[in-house]
Image 1 (cartoon, helix red, strand yellow):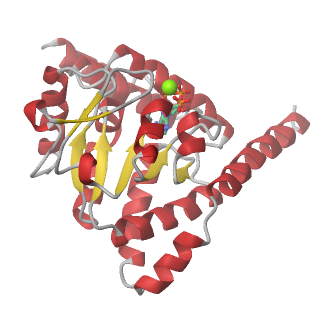
Image 2 (image 1 turned 45 degrees about the vertical axis):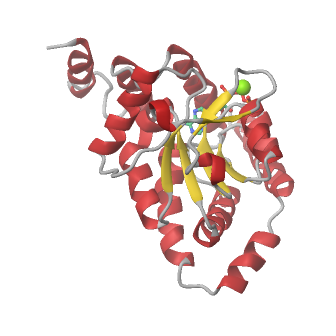
Length: 266
Ligand code: ATP
Ligand code: MG
């Protein structure tokens, strides 16, 4: 048994008790660890997950109303887009490969591997994971990422010509702030899934879904099916009526009110 299989067996043997209060969260964490064993996730990805977990704790580990509203607007943006692309990194692939592929098919949108820590072997590992989950086309791997997008602090990002480079709407999760800013500067509409309402990605994106990717992506697929039957004008009104900063304020207010309530229970 290789290390990755051994790790899977370890988690399946029921190390985490059924009644553990953080069971769901710990099982999600295991998926990211397994992703690292498969060379899909980098060590820094584990730390990013930890930062996210902290905010998810404050959200009560549920998709809250402000996230549902952002998800509905995102669905409207995705179905009315000319060329929507889902940008996939290691953590996203480890956490929700099947859900991402299902979502891409239902829009339909292209899938592109886009990594902060670029490495062709890892790109191929992520591509494999997406193909195993049913993807037929995966952009951004190796030579396919032939175009460059200037970024401020990180090295120049390479993207696919027929993918992110020519997209009008890009959906991403757990993305770095500089990279999100670079896409917004190129006039792309960016939908970000990010548990931290204060991250630069959350503040810069066109629409921020403050929720865990494991819950937000299946919910987004449901909403895509709902909004598809609405007429275009209605969808455009929905998009126009959304103000990301207001929605982020609601997320922050929710977290602070929840903390205040919890303080009364101690
Ligand atoms: P920024 O660069 O946008 O200021 P950051 O430097 O704080 O953000 P990064 O490591 O660049 O953080 O990005 C990871 C982001 O993803 C964090 O905001 C983290 O809260 C969020 N995150 C981690 N795990 C999840 C998850 N499972 N679902 C959604 N968001 C997550
Ligand atoms: Mg960052």
